[in-house]
Image 1 (cartoon, rainbow, N blue to C red):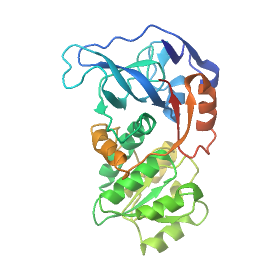
Image 2 (image 1 turned 135 degrees about the horizontal axis):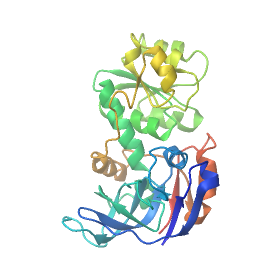
Image 3 (image 1 turned 135 degrees about the vertical axis):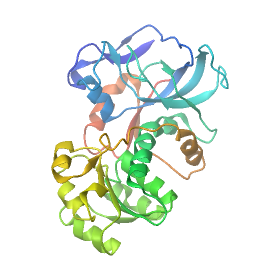
Image 4 (image 1 turned 60 degrees about the horizontal axis):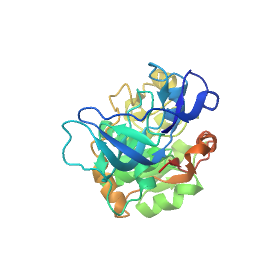
Length: 306
């Protein structure tokens, strides 16, 4: 089968190779799918640079959708030919950016949700949901989602609104109208964001989730809350430590995938989405990488494989 993987650590553009490899075999409790679509993310490129190092070669592609083509020992409730999606393990010689992939956790893909949209869900939902839990976001709370134009930030804003929270979002023109339609109050990035946010909120907000790329904004975000610990960030960890801001890793907000089935159903009904920037055939992975690293993807790049 064709697979995208690396044999040494370095910049993704330098070390990734599209090559032939042996098809993975599902072990006990696993299934194998013929991959139809695979979302690509900054985490994939970080794997190439040594994140979670391990035995090489290693595959990339952490979220996939496809059709079951083999079932491991002890697996029940799924059959050959079923449409499924889920997070792909990434510690072996191949992962999701392959013609076939093994899954340890999977969910049925609802009939109203296409393969590309399903492949965009796992990481954004899996990261946003527990982060909002850590912040205690629910009915009656006011939360600022900084970076609501990122895939995780956009997911977080939607989830917070569904929980009954009041949401203030920072976003550019690409997502501003959609966020307002969903029920969020939207303001722009840049200088003076703390003042704009507190003016919209009528005072300090209860919580802040920083899903934006590193930009030096954390000191401004701290000014929107009563105490720094009410801010949770996905990045800028050294600055966060100096300010007393919590980080997703330090706060125990690791990925949570058990809720994916719920959000797949919502997405199939048009009530939730993770934006897809563009789709690319597997052999055009380099173009997907360039878009992902451009800082202006406008959504998640997805590889079409099947």
